[in-house]
Image (cartoon, rainbow, N blue to C red; front, side, top):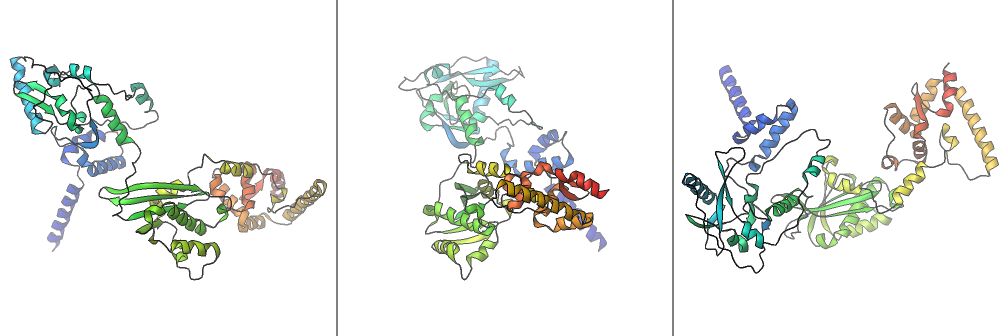
Length: 485
């Protein structure tokens, strides 16, 4: 029995080890990459290679292909150019025949009956003079081709972009040009002639004048931001919504064979009144506004609404809604959808849109400036209160009296009693907690939903200190030190 258990453990360990191995064709790459990585980084590197194993070629003859772009050769109304083959050294003839056969086998070229033809050239490689590179002399074809002026990046700009990076890696494409398809109408112009006959390229060959610009366009296309997909009315729509303190965001998407793809984005800043709504009310507003915006997509179909605010499902089933909530629920009743709760960490797409600054509107900036420049209320030394607009002389007398009363109150209390009172105070406790944790001054969006008193303390952040666990302002520091003595 024990031997059987030991055998099972060994078999399990062997299977687990094999499952954890890097694919065979990536072992060398992995070993060369982990020399300067920590153990944890090495495991992450291994995970990336295992997940993306299909992106790496197993051999030099394995090629990918993209349909994002096709190479065209615009020669206008030019007459086709026919050139005779050049004589090759007998020692190099076998190399040329072998390369032509290899390209036929992997589908790079095909036999041709084109009126165009260009000669081949075998060029010694710089890093290995004993080997040659199979090239085609397209100079006369290039002279007839209208040039593509798409800009290529400067090497200096590329080096400048590396500033601040900690890890550097290079990715060498497997015959990158050969992974770009030729436009069917222009294949015949790539024809080249050898003693074996006439052949033409099915993909973009090296040596064409516009090949670099075409490949750069492909790189821009691949590395650009995610491209929106066209809506498919045969697939179910997914609407992700979220609301923050000053805006809402929504993402409309659909699930395709290659994963979930975005159809459209939507975001909107809240008005001054909408900013005062409670969290649940703002989240419901986000759903209503988003469905209104995407009405022409989702009306008459069944769709899924995803939100991380779980209370919305309860609110939609509320029996006796009133006022604005009742109107919103009546509006939503004309749509066929279900609500799904999603964890906040998975809801970053809509959450980011709801928090995106509205740079075209100055309302947020004005509001933040107004709060941060608010006049300091002396009555906030002990507990903030709302002061009335009184005559300046009367206000001065009241403020002096208020300060003296506060000092007398503090003298009658011990440090422990004051500390307990501050911790129980709903306003001071918020600021005191941040100060005790040595937190930096919170951003406006983090305190925008707090009370007016908390915002008053926030505007005086640099004046606030904590001594012996007590929250005080600079003006009372000497008094507190005297009290402690």
